[in-house]
Every structure is written in structure tokens, then in C-alpha cells.
Amino acid sequence: MINETFVASDPKSAYEQAVEKYGTDIKIVSAKQVKYNDDELRSEVVIAVPKALFMERSFGAQALLPEVNGEEEGLLNEIGDLKTQLDEMRDGLLQQGRFGAVADDVKKRFMKKGIAERWLDSILIPLIGTPVMEDAQLLVSYLLEEIDETLKIKEEDMESSKIMMLVGPTGVGKTTTIAKLAARYAYLLDRPYRVALINLDSYKVGAIEQLAHYADIMQIEHYSIASAEAFQEKIEDLASYDVILVDTAGMSPYDTQKFIKTVEFVTTEIPKKIEVALVLAATVKYEDMEDIHENFSFLNLDSVIISKFDETKHFGTLMNFMLLYDLPMSYFSTGQEVPDDLLVASKEYLLEQFIGDVHEG
Image (tube, rainbow, N blue to C red; front, side, top):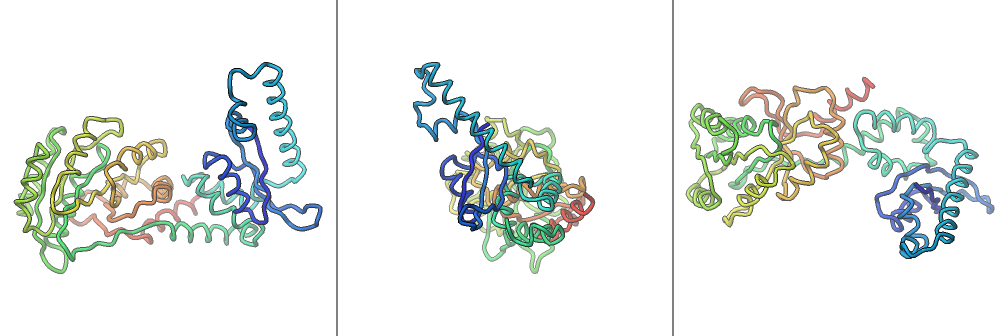
């Protein structure tokens, strides 16, 4: 990795210079204010980039060509190494951490709880040189306020009829969540809505029977569909219903066949738009987040339903998912009881869980 320093009147502008040159795939080494010859404060942001990218953007694409002779290549390497050494010397002389001791400690605490470094850096850089960075309690409060501002909620709207399709990885609780939603819409709101259930899961053993069992108890229409054509016909038959809830097969993010099949259903030509809700477990692992979003985002997600709140006390990774991927939350599933363990999503509820986890840290 090669370090490069960007200087501007404020840290945000310096960071934007780095992004303009290298893109967002950069790592911040340090960000601080220093005095220059004119005795005015300047903001310095030091970033680290892969050596090949540094050579290409600094010396042109020819710096990466195999035709470069050994003497030229050696010179380029020496220049890069010298620049790295100078930046390391500067960091040693300036004596401070990336953001200062207090802010670095707060940042480390949030990262330990699952919040991505790149999101934290985007919030902290504009604060360099302000009193907030020297007060741990104030900085924690500021970060929590930024989290609150960033989180999005999809309000429950029953003004018009809708089709809601639930998708998600295997084992996140889609079928149980469908049953909770059906009970809510049919019995628990200001008036009883006419609800129908459609099952598209022909893969999981017992999936059809499980949803049919819930439907029988609630006296709600239930249908099992195997093809996109049959799905289109059934949607047309159910045009008079207020809510149609669609259960899909649980999918590994790597199961191409099931994804293609689900896309066929989502893109079916029907009069109404299908609201696609990703069911995501509160227990999601950091390593799986990117794969889940990368694959399921092709279904044009409208919201996220978070399940399994009762199976963890650590919500940082889930919070990180919601911050990075800019998706609104619609419902929280907090247990196995139908229909009791279902809440309309709220920022306050998720923040309460996360704040408790941060304070424990």
C-alpha cells in the first residue's frame, strides 16, 4: 500500500480530493489539522491505496505496462517507497492518532460493535477540529444521532390494495412472518382486510403444509403456485382482495437457479406492483451481509423485515447493514408467537437494542 496526503481548507474537501483521484476504495490512515507556512490551519487527510492504483493514477497507465524496463520500474518503486517513508515520518512527528485519542477510542468501540469503518470515517472527518472530537460522551451521542438520521422506515400503508412478496436466505423465518402479517391485516387493524396467501416454495419439505396450517387456523385463502403463468392468473383471480402475501423459497445467496425462478415471479406482468420485502435475521453475520445484499438487490427491494430479534443481544452488524445499504425497515419479528411477536418497524426500538449493546462495551 502507498500513502498519499491530500490538503484542503476542511477535512471533507481533502477527502473528496482523494475520492476524486482514487474512488471510494481507499483507506484513511490519518486525518488532522496542521499549521502551514502562512500560519493558517489546513486539514490533511492521509489515505492508503494499492501500489498499482497509485502508480496508474500518479504516473499514467504506462506505469503498469509490462514493457517498462527494469531501470524505470526500479525508479518508480523507489519513488513510491520514499513517499511512504516520508508519510510515516510525518505521522510520527504529528504524534496524534487518526482522529485523536478520544475520537479513536469511540470509533474503535463502534467498530467492535459491528459498525463499518468507512461509515464512521464519513461521519468523523467533517468533525475534525471541533470540540465534539474531544468529548467522548458528546461524540457517542452525535454518532447515535447520525445513525438515527440515516435509518429509514417504510410506513405501513393500508390505503390501497397491495401484493407483498417476502424473500430472503434460508431459515430466516419467512413463513412464520407471513402468518403474522396475515393475522395482523385480517384481524388486528382498524378494520378486517381481505387477505390471501400464495406459496411459491416447492423446494422446502413441509413449506406448503406449514403455511396451509396457518391459513386454515385464520380461515384465510391459501394457494400453492408452481409457475409464473399460474402466478399471473391467480393474482388476476384475487384482484378483489386487499392484501396478497407471497411466500418464496429460502435461497442461499449463491443459488442461481432459485434466484432466476424468483425473478420470473417478481417480473410477472400484472396490474399491481409487487412490494418485495427482504426478510433479514437480526443474527446476520458481517461476512454474509455483502453477499446477501448483492444478490437480493436484483429483486428491487422495497423494504427489510427484520426477524429473530429474540435470538441475539448484539445488533451492531444488523445496524451496519441498514446504514450501508440504505433500505427502509417495515416490520420487526421478535419471537415465534403468531400473531403477537410482530412490531411495525421503528428507529427507536432498534436504537434501544443497539445502545444497550454499546454501553455494555
